[in-house]
Each structure stands twice: as C-alpha cells, then as structure tokens.
Length: 412
Ligand SMILES: Cc1ncc(COP(=O)(O)O)c(C=O)c1O
Image (cartoon, rainbow, N blue to C red; front, side, top):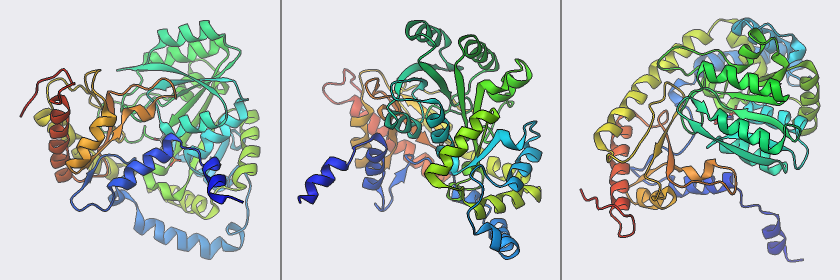
C-alpha cells in the first residue's frame, strides 16, 4: 500500500488551509507584525471571572455537566441569553452551538442539497465559503457596496436563476468580515422584502454587532423581519460569544423558527453530539451575574484607540491610490489597490518587510476571485505595532507599484 499516494488523494487543498500556511509561514519571526489573523485581543478575555465561574460550575454541577447534554443546548444558557438580549423567542427557537461556525454548518445542512444555490456577499467570510463549497452548493456572489450588498445585483440573480433553487442569502450585516462594512437600515428592510417576495431564507451571521466603536446600532435583520414584517421565520440568525469572551469557549447560538431549529439540532447531534457543556454553564453564569455589559465596555475601550490608530497610520503612510472605508466597529478594515495590482504578489513583498495581511482573493467564491483587495485585522496588534506595521505595508505597496509591469512609477 502506497500511503503517501493515499494521503495525497485525501488532502484537499482548500482556501482555509492555504491561509493557515500563510499565517504559519510568518509565525515566530522576531519583530514580525501580523494583521492577518481574525483573533480578538487576548487582553480582553475575562480570565479572572471565567476562571472562578468554571471552577464554581464544575464543583456545583459537575455530575451533570460533565455528562452528555441536550443537542439543542442547556436551558440555563438559553434563558440567560433571552434575558440578557431581551429576546422574544421560545427555548425551542434557539440552538446553542459550538461557535458560529457550527451553527452556520447546521443551518446550511438543514437547507441545502448538493446543487442548490446560496447567494453570498462578495467578498465574504472565507470559513463559510469553504463550508458551503464542501457541501456541494453552488455559490453566487453579489458585490459589496459601502452600505451593504448590491440589491440590484441580487434581484438580477434571482430573476436569472429563479427563486426555487436559491435556498438562502448569506449576509454579515454588521462590520462584515472581511470588509468592515455595515448594511444600512434601508437595505436591511429591502433585503427582507426581496427575501419574503421570493420565499428565500436569510442566514444572518452576526459575530460583530456588539463590537460597535462609533455611530448608532442598527436593528438586526432578524429583528426587522419579526417586528416590521411579522416574518421572523424568514431569518436564521447566528450570534457568537467568540469575539466577546474568547473563541476558545466555542459558544454561539442560532435563532430561527422551531422547525428549522429542530432540524439544526439533529445535525448538531450527528456532528458533535452536544455543545461544550462546561462552557455553556460558565457563560450562563457570566450572563446571570450581569457581567456582560461592563465587559463590552472594556472591549470597546480597548479597540477604539486601535481603530483610530490604524486609520491615522493609513492616512499618514499609504499612497494616494489606495482606498478604504472607515469601519464603525468589528475587527477588520479592507484596503483596495488599483485593479491591476495583485495582493497575492504584495504578500511576499510585505513578508520581506516583516508584515503580513490576508490577500483579498481568499474571500471570493471559487471562480469569482478578485485580486486587488486585502484584509487588515486591527484588534490583535498593539497601537505601536499598528503604526510600524502600516509603515512597512505602505513601503511594500510602493515597491509593488514601482515594479516594471505595474503601470505605476512610484518611488519613495
Ligand atoms: C463572519 C464570521 N462568522 C463566523 C465566524 C466563526 O466564529 P466562531 O468562533 O463563533 O465559530 C467568524 C470568525 O471569525 C466570522 O468572522
């Protein structure tokens, strides 16, 4: 048996593993600055409280919570979330899942058969793209605009492909990953109207809305569909504690019609049986103690100066031709270079300057890649690293622009 051959047949070279390779390539280099990851700042993790609460829940409830639990999640956590968020949903309209990634997977498996169509914002979160592609779904992109997805393009796609095969529209309305853009209230309402008219579900992925650093909050699509259109069942909302309390906890939740939740629970049962119960109970206790609101303030106080710094540094150092829209929160900022420049090529030049980012091509469905964008994370590096890192990145951009085939003649 030729095991090497077997393994090479098994290994799928997917976008996500290519990104891991990119990130690993730059780890451990002294003085290296990375804007590449999607990690919150470890400084914001509520380690002291969670440490106490994990100890407490294991001591008090260990016999129960170290056992398997209900696939839909523990009722204590569901109740705590409903109270904290002021939600008007029943316990059977919520699933506790192992991170948003797991909830997105369960929703997708519930709605999609191979060959079905999913409409996504373009660019969009790569983790969801690889999940959708792995299930054999056909993915159709709709361009992002400063106020959210291009709804004229969405209407055109629905007209062209018919609403029967299109199972859902996937959107990240707040501080989108990777662009940092937020969908306006008007567009959220119009999107609900389009989805209702054509009987297409909306999968609303929301890990970032609570990381608002400027401006006023906008109602979620789930809320709008329920309150204004009395059609809450149109939307499956996925919300996560990953960016608030730490992604290692693996705690998120889905809100949807109870029939959908029932199917999603049976997918969760098949895939991972039960969401981490000790984490569920510790998060429930964290919410019950009323710790979340002050914790959210700590996070926004930590991130606000970092966002301010990255914008100041970009304004100070980037060449004129580089464009971006200032995000009002979240963790990412998207840069657009002139169309004939390729950020996959820029990556190597940036690594030579000891700085990394994620090339934009990774955030498009296969076959629809664009190459002139890039994603910067501003929540992981320190303020000082942000300024130095943007200086280095600007230098790499100028070097790329000055290369003989670029069409630019830019020298420092
Ligand atoms: C848009 C989006 N959805 C989902 C996830 C996955 O989050 P979780 O850690 O809750 O699985 C992420 C993580 O970066 C994300 O950016």
